[in-house]
Length: 187
Image (cartoon, rainbow, N blue to C red):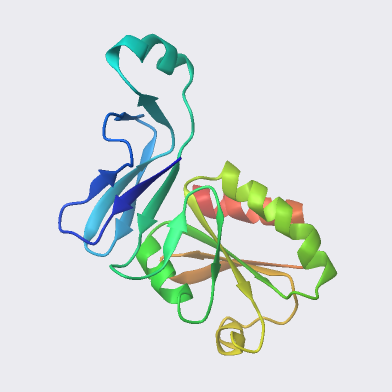
């Protein structure tokens, strides 16, 4: 189930396909800047269908996918998933992420080490829900962005904070990538 967070209106709202559901955000939430609105994205959400089911639902707390529209008619990032970007969508997403940590996987379709790292990168996106995970296919179409970001080898992982590249990991070095993410998150 996905709950959509609408950022296109002046007042952001939780949008759900089931109006009888009650949404309870845990105190472990983090702010996410989108357009001119501040949005709270909960890292854990408790779903309660009715008062009579309250006891059962408390025991079955689920992590829900929260989608946040980063621009009125622009790209969408899903928490806990890797989002494919291109030369047109990359900077709007990074700008909307504001002070959030952004990790970009720069890969190519033909790269063997890139294919090995892809599922592990997805696992990281599921683990670090306060980090935005993006991937960029460094094909001919996205060559200008890859050149702007200074890619020399694939895979290359760029870690951004406040719209600036603060760390880089080249090659299929999973432990180095985890250490770099941890360092940027704690700074």
